[in-house]
Structures are given as C-alpha cells and as structure tokens.
Length: 155
Figure (cartoon, rainbow, N blue to C red):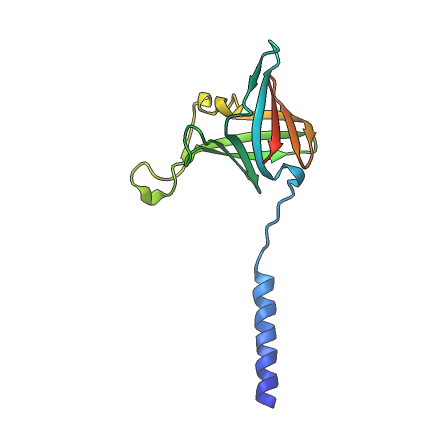
C-alpha cells in the first residue's frame, strides 16, 4: 500500500514537472489566422481590377508565418513570409522560397529571396510590405498597401 501511494506521488510529480517544463505557444492573430483565397486585386492608382475568384491563389496564416501559393501554377511550392501585426496593420517581411526539405538535394530547403517580383502574383510588391487592415472578420479580409487593395474570402 505504501509502495502504491509512493508510486502515485512520484507519477504525479513527474507529470507536473513535465507540464511545467513545456512552453505552449499560442497565436494571438485573431481572425487573421486561417486559409484565405485571394479573390480580387485592385490597383489604387488606376482603378484597375484583377478578378482572381476562379484562380487558386491562397494565403495561409498560422502563428508567425504566411504561406502564399498559386495552386494552378505549382501545387507543392510557394513562398513563406514572416509578419508583424498590430490592431490596424500587417507588415510582411523575410520571404523564403518553399523548396520542401533540405534532404531533397542541393536545391532543397527554404531559400531566402531578394527579388520582390516573385511575390507580385500574391499582391506583395516589396520584400517588406505594409498592409492596412480595411476589413478583417471571420469570413472576409481586405488589405491595402500603398499601391494595391487585396480582397480575400476565408476558404
């Protein structure tokens, strides 16, 4: 009986130590987290509009990363960007080309990019881009940069 009680006490102590040593990271991105379909891009200077509603261009947001991908052009690869968020802005930065894992040969792994033209199909025109949140709720998102307005629908 003493051995059983000692075992339970040691087990409980082990569980408490294990839980206390873990750091659980949670996202405070609110409605920004999720999978977004880029449906329309408006050019602010000219009033031009590009309808992407029939295309499969997506932003996936989770924790501290944005994954951008055009599934019609390349189902497996796209780009990753880090971002900072305030209550009214999102700033994307530090873009990488997604080349899967390092074990895929010399070209494997994520590679930093320095050409912002690679990000243009996703509505991002600079390596560091600031977007004002015009609308962000559970179903819709509208972001505005200095030159473009991006309209998304939650997918």
